[in-house]
Image (cartoon, rainbow, N blue to C red):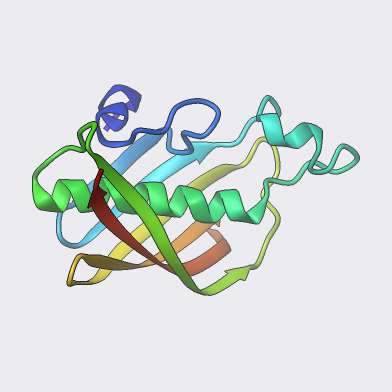
Length: 144
């Protein structure tokens, strides 16, 4: 999926859209997506000026965005103006390596289960084949 198709599945826009491309997606199973981290990112000016590092919470948010795409692909639908995909929980989050400008983040997100409207995923973010962060994320879709 290129950026144009991603925009059909996520309501996020710059500077909060954190997925640049989907490399693979098997509905009901898993997704692999990427983000190219550039020095132009708005958070680098303040986090930290002397040693720019991508905030860990944004790495986790990007995992949830990849999970959202997987959820909608699994359901065979796209979000509309009346639906919101909420991030409702994070378990077992670990940050193992700082993410810096010039890195390419690869998100690997696998569906663990869907029950009573809650989706749970195992997610990792890798840079150069090394895990930078990992977590279990939970999300839900609500109509406004």
